[in-house]
Image (cartoon, rainbow, N blue to C red):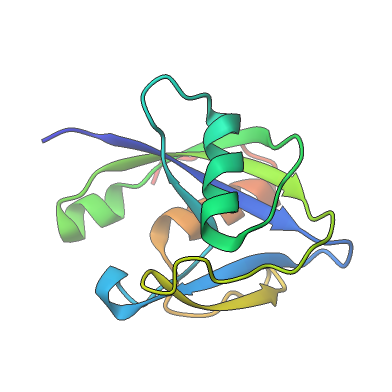
Length: 139
Protein backbone atom coordinates (compact mmCIF):
# COMPACT_ATOMS: atom_id res chain seq x y z
CA UNK A 1 0.00 0.00 0.00
CA UNK A 2 1.19 3.50 -0.71
CA UNK A 3 0.33 6.94 0.58
CA UNK A 4 -1.38 9.14 -2.01
CA UNK A 5 -0.66 12.86 -2.24
CA UNK A 6 -3.52 15.12 -3.20
CA UNK A 7 -4.49 18.76 -3.15
CA UNK A 8 -7.52 20.37 -1.57
CA UNK A 9 -8.44 23.84 -2.77
CA UNK A 10 -10.46 26.35 -0.81
CA UNK A 11 -12.05 28.80 -3.23
CA UNK A 12 -13.26 31.84 -1.34
CA UNK A 13 -15.58 34.58 -2.60
CA UNK A 14 -15.74 38.22 -1.51
CA UNK A 15 -18.42 37.37 1.09
CA UNK A 16 -16.06 34.94 2.84
CA UNK A 17 -17.97 31.89 1.62
CA UNK A 18 -16.22 28.79 0.30
CA UNK A 19 -17.26 26.59 -2.60
CA UNK A 20 -18.24 23.02 -1.74
CA UNK A 21 -19.41 20.06 -3.75
CA UNK A 22 -21.50 17.07 -2.72
CA UNK A 23 -19.93 13.86 -3.91
CA UNK A 24 -22.15 11.21 -5.44
CA UNK A 25 -22.86 8.13 -3.37
CA UNK A 26 -20.38 5.96 -5.29
CA UNK A 27 -17.65 8.34 -4.07
CA UNK A 28 -19.11 8.41 -0.54
CA UNK A 29 -21.84 11.05 -0.17
CA UNK A 30 -19.70 13.67 1.54
CA UNK A 31 -19.54 17.43 1.14
CA UNK A 32 -16.04 18.60 0.31
CA UNK A 33 -13.85 21.32 -1.09
CA UNK A 34 -12.48 20.45 -4.53
CA UNK A 35 -9.16 18.88 -5.45
CA UNK A 36 -7.58 15.61 -6.45
CA UNK A 37 -4.44 13.54 -6.78
CA UNK A 38 -1.10 15.03 -7.81
CA UNK A 39 0.21 13.65 -11.11
CA UNK A 40 3.92 12.70 -11.40
CA UNK A 41 6.02 15.76 -12.24
CA UNK A 42 3.24 18.20 -11.36
CA UNK A 43 3.55 21.09 -8.89
CA UNK A 44 0.88 21.47 -6.21
CA UNK A 45 -0.25 24.71 -7.85
CA UNK A 46 -0.49 23.10 -11.31
CA UNK A 47 -2.49 20.25 -9.82
CA UNK A 48 -4.89 22.69 -8.10
CA UNK A 49 -5.46 24.66 -11.32
CA UNK A 50 -5.98 21.46 -13.37
CA UNK A 51 -8.32 19.79 -10.89
CA UNK A 52 -10.52 22.89 -10.44
CA UNK A 53 -10.79 23.28 -14.23
CA UNK A 54 -11.64 19.56 -14.65
CA UNK A 55 -14.14 19.39 -11.78
CA UNK A 56 -16.01 22.69 -11.91
CA UNK A 57 -14.82 24.48 -15.05
CA UNK A 58 -13.30 27.49 -13.24
CA UNK A 59 -9.88 28.92 -13.98
CA UNK A 60 -8.25 29.87 -10.68
CA UNK A 61 -5.36 32.32 -10.48
CA UNK A 62 -2.30 31.99 -8.27
CA UNK A 63 -3.40 29.36 -5.71
CA UNK A 64 -1.28 29.52 -2.55
CA UNK A 65 -0.18 26.57 -0.38
CA UNK A 66 -1.09 27.29 3.25
CA UNK A 67 -1.08 23.90 4.97
CA UNK A 68 -0.82 20.14 4.92
CA UNK A 69 -3.22 17.53 6.26
CA UNK A 70 -2.40 13.92 7.07
CA UNK A 71 -5.81 12.23 6.82
CA UNK A 72 -5.45 9.43 9.36
CA UNK A 73 -9.11 9.09 10.31
CA UNK A 74 -9.96 8.04 6.73
CA UNK A 75 -7.03 5.60 6.82
CA UNK A 76 -8.29 4.05 10.07
CA UNK A 77 -11.86 3.81 8.72
CA UNK A 78 -11.28 2.89 5.07
CA UNK A 79 -7.65 1.80 4.73
CA UNK A 80 -6.88 4.64 2.29
CA UNK A 81 -4.05 6.93 3.35
CA UNK A 82 -3.93 10.38 1.75
CA UNK A 83 -1.86 13.44 2.51
CA UNK A 84 -3.49 16.67 1.34
CA UNK A 85 -1.60 19.79 0.39
CA UNK A 86 -4.06 22.61 1.10
CA UNK A 87 -4.28 25.63 -1.18
CA UNK A 88 -6.31 28.84 -1.14
CA UNK A 89 -7.60 30.65 -4.23
CA UNK A 90 -9.74 33.76 -4.58
CA UNK A 91 -12.92 33.38 -6.62
CA UNK A 92 -12.58 35.74 -9.58
CA UNK A 93 -15.86 35.07 -11.35
CA UNK A 94 -17.40 32.64 -13.77
CA UNK A 95 -20.15 30.15 -13.07
CA UNK A 96 -18.96 26.92 -11.44
CA UNK A 97 -20.36 23.90 -13.28
CA UNK A 98 -20.60 20.20 -12.52
CA UNK A 99 -18.10 18.91 -15.08
CA UNK A 100 -18.04 15.38 -13.60
CA UNK A 101 -21.66 14.59 -12.62
CA UNK A 102 -20.67 10.97 -11.95
CA UNK A 103 -18.44 12.24 -9.10
CA UNK A 104 -20.20 15.37 -7.86
CA UNK A 105 -23.92 16.09 -7.86
CA UNK A 106 -24.33 19.52 -6.25
CA UNK A 107 -22.44 22.80 -5.70
CA UNK A 108 -22.92 25.31 -2.92
CA UNK A 109 -21.31 28.44 -1.50
CA UNK A 110 -21.09 27.97 2.25
CA UNK A 111 -20.17 29.86 5.40
CA UNK A 112 -17.05 27.96 6.56
CA UNK A 113 -18.28 28.13 10.17
CA UNK A 114 -21.36 26.05 9.30
CA UNK A 115 -20.21 23.11 7.19
CA UNK A 116 -22.82 20.72 5.84
CA UNK A 117 -22.69 17.11 7.00
CA UNK A 118 -21.55 14.51 6.30
CA UNK A 119 -18.25 16.25 5.52
CA UNK A 120 -15.12 14.66 4.03
CA UNK A 121 -12.26 14.43 6.55
CA UNK A 122 -9.59 15.93 4.28
CA UNK A 123 -11.88 18.88 3.52
CA UNK A 124 -12.75 19.48 7.18
CA UNK A 125 -9.04 19.34 8.11
CA UNK A 126 -8.11 21.80 5.33
CA UNK A 127 -10.82 24.27 6.37
CA UNK A 128 -9.82 24.07 10.06
CA UNK A 129 -6.15 24.74 9.26
CA UNK A 130 -7.13 27.75 7.14
CA UNK A 131 -9.45 29.16 9.81
CA UNK A 132 -6.82 28.77 12.53
CA UNK A 133 -3.98 29.98 10.27
CA UNK A 134 -2.13 26.75 11.10
CA UNK A 135 0.18 24.95 8.70
CA UNK A 136 -0.28 21.51 10.24
CA UNK A 137 -2.14 19.86 13.07
CA UNK A 138 -1.71 16.39 14.53
CA UNK A 139 -4.97 14.42 14.13
